[in-house]
Image 1 (cartoon, helix red, strand yellow):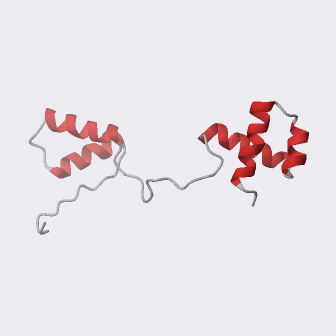
Image 2: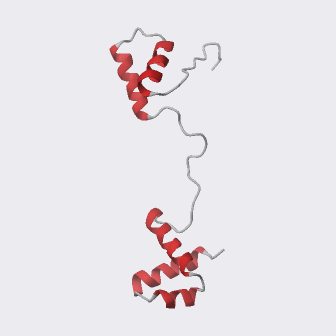
Image 3: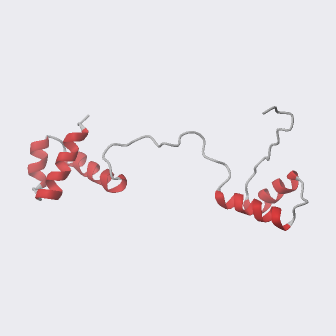
Length: 107
């Protein structure tokens, strides 16, 4: 693995001093593909090291749009039962969600 510092130096040599790529590759001693992969990663993320996302785990099953749909549904017809909300989520949003209630759970 090439050190992150060396990759940063190689990118700086090209951006600041406009050195030729061949000269940079010779000094840094890594391949052309590695240089361009590093450059692409830097353009996409602003960093040369792939970091783990801060938010890990299972992605949420209800998106913001789905939550807004539920809120608007509750405002239009507040007397619906939970199973009717589930049915409408499946029918109109194609989201097979099970709304769970924990009435017996102690907080």
